[in-house]
Image (cartoon, rainbow, N blue to C red; front, top):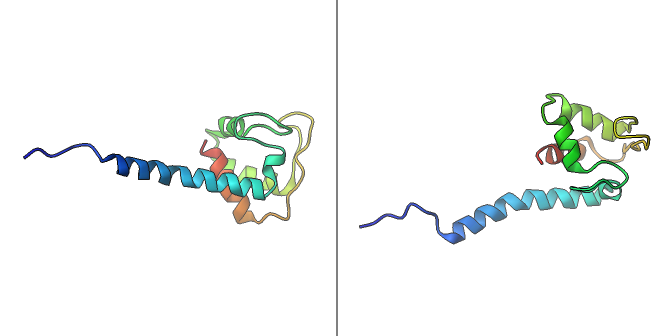
Length: 105
């Protein structure tokens, strides 16, 4: 009797879907929070692309805390002359979830 060492295609499709759902959910959260007015995943709009943020902070162990504060309080001078407006209306938990999603890119 031969035992297959590969997963059926349906398992692979489910695994791909499970991986994609958090990304889609977080993009929806970014859109609902107003982030996509100034930011996109792979291109600079008003603010930097999320992928550029992830690249810049990839090896920074304090990036999550730094960026949560920056999103909450606003900031200027890190990506050019246009300041990032503060977002005190977005909960710290939501900001943290978005920052962790961005840094995972």
